[in-house]
Image (cartoon, rainbow, N blue to C red; front, side, top):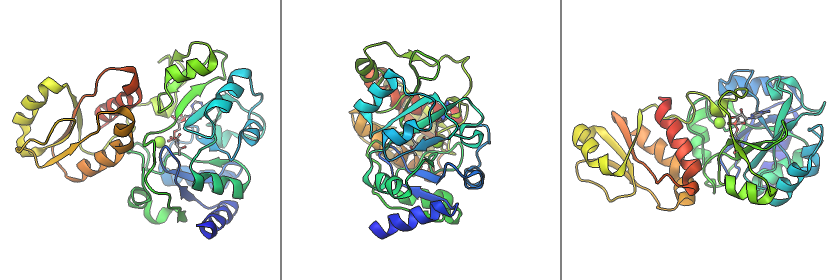
Length: 313
Ligand code: TXA
Ligand code: MG
């Protein structure tokens, strides 16, 4: 593993692409200071050039060199949640070029907790641009096998790190315009952020500048996904029969061949979600029926991803 990390850091220095595990999802990494490396990253992802990418660091001190300032709120969140599944959006410094920020005046920075990610970032020594290691618009990968299935030979090296523990992308908080705004919910909840800040966190205003995490088709399998209230699941299954694939809390129904049973706790559910969607997608049914989780704060991030998957196809 140590040799692989050293080789991965060399590949990044040479302008190559390395997929690596993080605690949220696997990332596709490139040297964030290299225009050509980042251009290749965007080409492989199939991602529009005006979509900003998150830059990853081994520690907060180095991360804040890429921002114009580190306001008290950013320091407080970094101290509480880094390393971990949190991305901070702040005004950028001269270190952050247009090609990583999508020409925005801000930059997204994160210090991941996964030991392999940390070792890679430490060995590389500076910022690594890394979107999720899937093709644009598809479900994020939570294992090295998912990455290989999506990106195959287009990536120079895939580092192994086991299944991602969180399973969904990091919480993103925008601090670049003063008061904190939650751009993307994740394992770290709005309530946890508010407790750490001692101040309210606003939800994203739909009229705010666009960012792809908030855009149309994201996190979507090829098979149409439908969110179904628990009481309506039976009726929907009766309509589709064997042409339905089902993701549910309840026990399998014999009319359905592809049925995955999900955990009743939100963290366990999030951990399994993307792998489950991939598995059901591969069944090539007419629809993936998802028994809707409760509309409760603990389920905020999972509901967000399910709604995107359901509106995405
Ligand atoms: O958990 C994660 O965040 C994973 C792992 C690999 O770290 N990365 C990830 O990256 O999800 P990506 O590129 O798939 O999603 C990045 C999100 C996008 O919604 C993007 O718009 C937002 O971060 N973002 C990045 N920089 C931003 C900025 N300056 N302002 C607003 N949003 C930004
Ligand atoms: Mg992504």
